[in-house]
Length: 360
Ligand code: PEP
Ligand code: MN
Image (cartoon, rainbow, N blue to C red; front, side):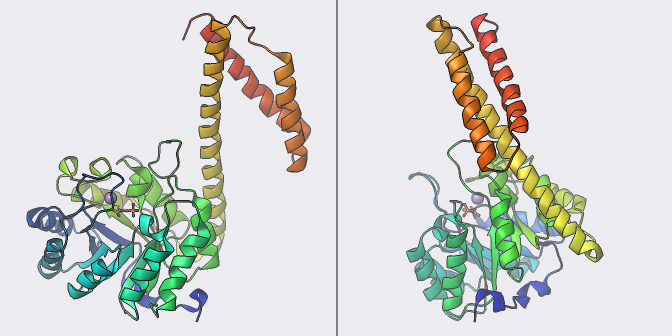
């Protein structure tokens, strides 16, 4: 049995897009029950309630989750409001406790997927489970590591699998908390079209404004659903406050989603996929251009302080020669690359000029 042979019919139990919502972290019984009640009251199609019980935090001394007591609150959410429940497990002890509490869906977090020892430990603790296990992409952009984690689960006869695209961390901060890098997720999808893929716009965006766009983008390229952090009082959340939304905002977001006409799936999918990849690259080009301009401004300041002319013909020659050489290697025309670099250079000079004459 390989990953490609998996049927993954667990997903057909849910109408699509399949939505998972709930707080980043379980904080108190009252917070969990109020969040669940309000999601229910919106009548939004949300069959699954999430909450982090154990929280992986970047730095020590932050809130690290309420621990096993939170599993009782998840149980109450299930009993009182009929949600299926989902939580993150990061070691064998978490797995034992979550299985004991009959959590329906377990996920492996991005910080665990990076570590084969951790994934192996979780897989062995889950051996043969019929529960659904979702694997978030690793924090670093490594497709093989993501696939390897699923292979480890399959190796323990865990066959109800799915993945969550939550973006990839980068040193350069952009408008995203974690860059979507759609290419990686779409490569995963084309290798394993049989493995359901959900988007996690909350951890991609890190804020509330981008959530709807990212979710829609994911549906456009054929994702089966989303996991969205939802909290009864987001501003006061103990973790990830800036990206969480209220149940009512969640319902509004869901009602605005356009679910694609499956009759056109072939064409739409192809087209959507290409457009997403192009937008992704445009985003990266703009980010890089902006970084380049900032460095250019630093150079402008140095030139000013040292009384050096802005235009340095020797330097410009090196830059264009390099660009032309790269254009040849990558099959682009010299003319095109020269035009692009001329435009970039002109803007750079303009910026440095502004610095020289103290307009900035
Ligand atoms: C989470 O879902 O709250 C979480 C910790 O996510 P990630 O593993 O994607 O960082
Ligand atoms: Mn979170």
